[in-house]
Image 1 (cartoon, rainbow over the protein chains, first blue to last red):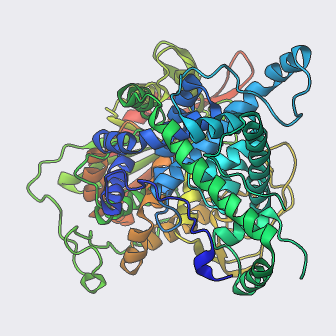
Image 2 (cartoon, rainbow over the protein chains, first blue to last red):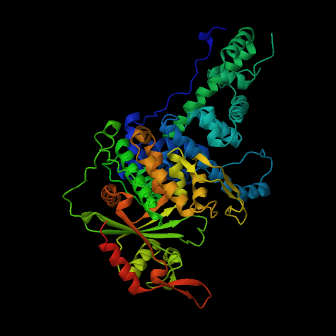
Image 3 (cartoon, chains in turn orange, blue):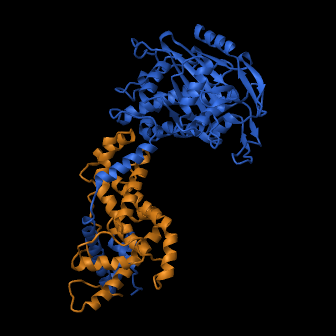
Amino acid sequence: MDSQNVVNFAVPGHDDHCGLTDLMIQDLIERAVAGDEIAARQLHDAHYPAVLRLAYMLLQNRQDAEDATQDAFVYAFGRLAQYDPARSNFATWLRVIVASRCRDLQRRRRIPWLSLQELFEVGLEPEDETPNHQPDIVLELVGVQQMVWEALEQVPRKSRQALILRYFGGLSYPEMAHALSCSISTAKSRVAYGHQALARLLEREARIELGYHGYHIGDVP
Amino acid sequence: MNKHLNDRKLLSYLEDDLSSRQRAQAEAHLRGCLACRARLESLGQTAANLTTTLHAVGEQIPLAPARSWEAVAQRWKRQRPRFYVPPLLRHAATLAILVLIIAGLAGLLHTLAVTGPALTRVTPTPLPTPTSPANPASAPGPLPRPYPDRPAAPVSILVLGTDGESATSDETDALMLFYLDASVRRAFLLSIPRDLYVEAPGYGQACAGSVYGLGEQGEATNGLRLAQETISATLGLPVQYAALIHFDGFVTLIDALGGLDVEVLHPVEDPTFPDGHGGYDPLSISAGTQHLDGALALRYARTRVVPAPGFDRAFRQQQIVLAVHERVTRLELLPDLIAHAPALWSSVTGGIETDLSLSDVIDLALLANGLTADDVATATLDECCTAPYTTPAGRRVLLPQSDEIKVLIEQLLEEER
C-alpha cells in the first residue's frame, strides 16, 4: 500500500498559541511568577476557553467544569516557577493539569454516586458512570456530529475521556498517561477501546436509521 | 499473510507512531488485506468525525472568563508567598540577581547566627549589576559602597528559625536579633535563648520560643508581629522587622545550589539521630572533604554528638553557612544561577516568611554587603543578664534582667568595630 493511500490523518492543530507567541507567553509567565497580576490575568484569559471546554467535555457539567478550571489555574499559577517550556507547551501543560483535576473531582464524588446508581439502576457497565449531574447546556448539533456526540456519551467513562483528551485536548500518549495517572500503554489501549465502542454504537445507530448513508461505517475485520 | 493488525497497531500507524520496521511490516500486511485497509480507513474517519464533533461542542460552551479570573485571582493571592516583586523586576537576569542578594543575605544571617569563636573572614564580593550580570572578569576588588549618599537609619530584624518538625507546636528553636547601622558601619547579632521568659503583650508570660506560636493561634494570627513586639519590649530596642526561616527552605536552597563541599574534620557517628517520628535515623559521615546535599548538610549541622573538642554543633553550623555563603557569592556560578532563577527564587521565598518587603530586603542586602563577619559583634543573652527560674508549672526558664540587658545593648551599640 502506497503511503498516498493511507488516510491522511493527524490530530488537527489547536490554537495553542491563543493569539500569543511563545515568547510573549514566556514573558507573561516570568511576570506572573514575580506576582504581576496583569500578566497572570492575560495568561488566564488566553487559555481559559480551551481549559474550560476540555473540562466540560470530561465532566459534562458546566458548574463542575468551572470548578475544575479554577482549580487548574490556581494550581498552575502556584507552580509557574516549575513550568519548563523545554518539556511542554504551556497550553498543553494546562490541559494536563485540568484533566488531572477533573479526574480528582470525579473520584471524590464517586462513592455516594455509585451507591445511588447501584440502588436504582442496573445493567450499566461496571467501569462506566453517567455524569454526576444532567448536562446543563443544550447543544445544537446536526447530522453526523449529533450521532457521534450521542454515541460518545455512551462510551464507558475511561475510554470516553481518553478519546476526548486525544481528539479534543490534542494530548500525546505520554501526556495522557500523566493526566490520567496510567501507563502510556494503558492510554493507547483506552483510545483503541474507545474507537471500538464508538464504532459499535454508531453501527447500531445507523442500522436503526435505515436509509441513512451520510456516515461511513468501517468494516470490522 | 500474517495475522490481522489490531486497532492499537492501526491507530499507531495512522498517527505515525511506529518504528520504521514496524511500519514496513504494517504496510506489507495492509497491501494484501482488504479488511485491515477498510478498518484503517474507518478509524481515520472516526477520528476525524470525533475531532470536528468535539470542536463543534466546544464552540457552544458559554464562557465567563471574568468570573473565572476573579475566583482564580482571589485564591492565587492567598497562596502566594509574602514577597511581592514589582512588575518591573521581571527579567530572568534581574531575578537571578535578586535571588543572589537574598540568598546572600540569608547566608549572611546564618553565618552570623552562630555565636562563639570569631568567624573566618569572608571576602566581600562586589554586587553584580544588572547591566553586566555574567561578567566574572569584574570579580574581586574593593567593594563599591552602594547608595553612598543614602542616609540609612539603623534597622533591627528579628530572625526566628524553625525546623518544621515541631510544626504542630509552632515552636521556634532559634531566635536572634540582627542589628545594622550602615551609616557608622556597625552591626551586631544577639542570640536569644528560647527559654527566656518574656512578657508577650496581651498573652501574658511565655517562653521566647513559644511567642510566635501564640501569635499564630490568636485571632489576628500574626506570630511575627507578636514576636517582634515582645522582643522589642524585652530588649528596650525598636525592632522594625521579623523573619521566620524554615530549615527545610534552607535545605531546598542547598539542593538548588547543587550541594556543598564541606571539610569534615572528624568522622561523625550519631546512631540516635531523631527521625522526626519518635524513632532513630542513624547518621554516619566519614572524615575528609564531603559533598553534602541539603538534607545531609542540615543533619550534619544539627546532630548533637561532639566527635572531638571544638568540633561541636556551633562549629559545624558555621561550616555549613560559610559554604552556602561562598557558593552563593561565587560569580562563576552566575550563568547557571540565571538559568535556574525561577526554581531558586521559589526555594528562597518558600523558606522565608517575613514582613520585610522586597525593596527592604534589597536595601538591607546592599547595606549588609559592605560588611564582613568581622564587622559584626556577637553576643548571647546568657547568664550575664538572665536568672534561672522555675515556673509554677515546673518549667525551667531564664528570667531576663532588664538592667543587665540594657548595659549589654549599650555596649554592643557603642562598641567600635
